[in-house]
Image (cartoon, rainbow, N blue to C red; front, side):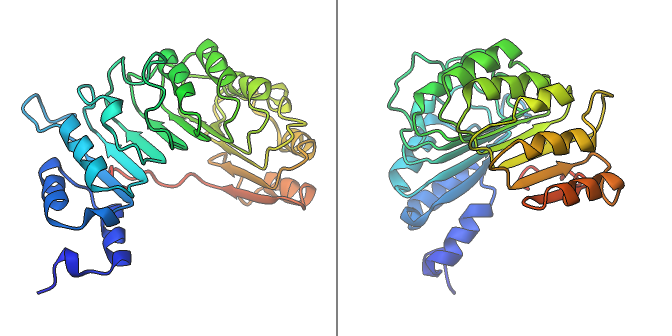
Length: 293
């Protein structure tokens, strides 16, 4: 009977990339199989399972780094990381995703060792309730960081976002989704500090035509995605969106999702007025209740 060690690298990496793992299972795999071939891993925790539930440990994270020298992407879901310092994560990571995780106040503070995760290019913070302004400013230690996703990080304030982006001027991709921040304040901070940004994706809560117009003339912006649902009357009209997009010299992709404009006159106006762009108008996808999707 074939074992995991007998599988080709391509098959093994595909399994490891999408298999949700528990701590005991991961220990077993690290000890028994050729983990040096592992590039991407998703791990589920037990954040909502009570005080007696098993936890991810610093020792496990350090072992992951030692046994998996080619690990580039780590996705942690519903995990209690309050006792797992960021210094214990594998130093080879280029992408770190935290989904519904708990972190400590010390996790991303600015004063920590600037040599931690020296290759980190992308960080996703999706429903991480403890994440706040101080953590955002602490991201400046990651000099290789180019992509930042903030999803449901309701403790981040408009003042904190502006101060944080001021020191993250090298970002090329920013997503701000489902936060309490208004879209106008987010775009104003972007226009002030992220002159090299190439991709912006944000929820349209609090978006107005003047707010969108601050992106006009952005020299590197290639992709703009606006996500609904529509909840404010200030939302720019299709004609106003078209006017602003025409003033974005490098824009090549415009995506409008969940605005209720698919197969409507709005879609026709934008497609006709932006022949140099890929215009995507679609409904919001159904949200999966499975954390590993």
